[in-house]
Amino acid sequence: MSEPRLVDVAKRAGVSVGTVSRVINGVPEVTPELRTRVEAAIDELGYRPNSLARSFRRQRSSALALVIPDVTAPFFAELAKHIEAAALKLNYTLLLGNAMCSREETGLTDVDGTMMRPSTRRSARVFR
Image (cartoon, rainbow, N blue to C red; front, side, top):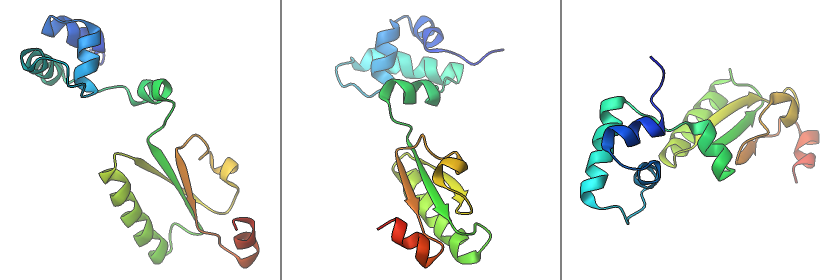
């Protein structure tokens, strides 16, 4: 069976797609009764918003990139772990890349922000 869509939730709850969207986005002008019906339909169907579609519509990826010199080095692995925990608290996904190549070469370009730790003094000058 395919993933449930917004229209499936709307049909199950007996409301419009717009009402489902307002509930998902936390718009306060939805009556408690409708909100309860929509939330029940979401739970019953196991609906999850499509993050790619949401990113496209909002023109934000909700993703951050971290580029570090060596993901296998204990210091940088620990750093990445803590940055990821902080990002998750803010509802961001963290993408990780090695600094062996440029940001474009890592494929980490379609993100809301990039954190880089230069690996050499020469590359540090580039980021000043």
